[in-house]
Length: 324
Image (cartoon, rainbow, N blue to C red; front, side):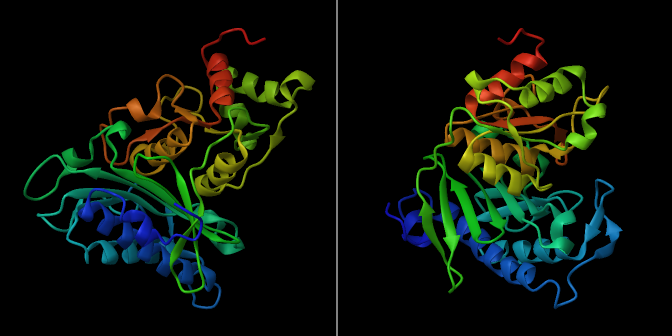
């Protein structure tokens, strides 16, 4: 496909009409969310909503607006059986005849809303495993079983990054509200020169993670160190840079913990799928993210994701192996 190809034309090459319809519904929803984000300061959409989500986190007004927009668009397509969202307690059935289920983080990085820093939407789509009303088991699938995944970055441009299992591709939202192919066949660099982590939390990390951070900051011309620290504070923003420029993004578990903070189903699995399809790597420190068997809808995990060689170097530290 050539640059400028519309998302609709790009999806014509896919095998499943139902999947295409679900993807188009999500794309249309994010175009609508983009308008809400762009004018949040003028339409009383900034600030908190005065409630917390199922994880006990403070909900922003735009979190709820984005969630409602996505659900409404998915309800208009017959291909979606159910949706799970960061803003819902459990599975929200949509169409018993639907073929696919969607897990979504409607607005990742919501702490950035009030300062107009990059935020985004992340989604994962599986073919359902049951019939009738969709339930938790339809979502308890490994990332390797994904039908599609993607994210949308709301930044200086609004960009949809998408994979249906045939590489990772980027589409830019044009002035008419349609996505056009702008980044065909993205390939992440094997080695990166940046690392992305909330270094202010370093004292909470295991010593092995602290050692890797120290390694990143040391001077060594052979490995192009020291690496540059880049941290936006939204997974979409940090992963987008990492995907296009190379490097590593990581959000470890704190000392004495195993699960980390980021959500498996609608943050880490779709991001791991996109990065892996682009030639990168993603791990929880012990196994590939895409190999993890989900056990809960809102399950959390540690994540180390980005350029293959950089991630593998990090994993050597985590496994206490000597790194030259």
